[in-house]
Image (tube, rainbow, N blue to C red; front, side, top):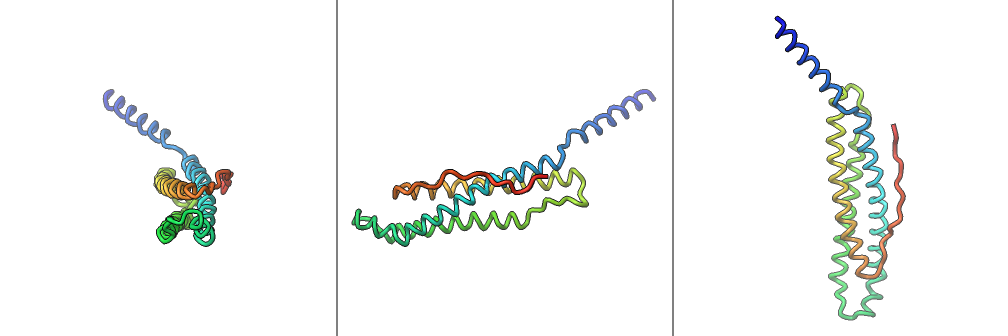
Length: 161
């Protein structure tokens, strides 16, 4: 009988300690929102890069062609349009994520909310990787034409709870 009571106490203690180790969903949600705020800096930078690429395509390539007659403007235009397409795709994916993201967890347990926000955290990290890659690529391309990419953006605070 003593073994059963001791066993029951151990199981109960472990069960309660397991519940206490679960993070509060508000902390995990805030991590997602903070990461989102950082990515929005990349979104603003993507917008600036698109404008610079568009200006280069419309006006700058002709100027560079005069300075460098061997410049293949057709190939450069294709590269510019490809980069703009990649930047737009990153923005579209971010917009889609923001439309689908729900901060409200009514009707969910803490564990369900934590699971949801952890899943969203993985998605937002993937978006961050996409933005980083396409921004690095477009920055490098702009630098090829001595166009300095915008570097001073400040984070936005979207929502704090």
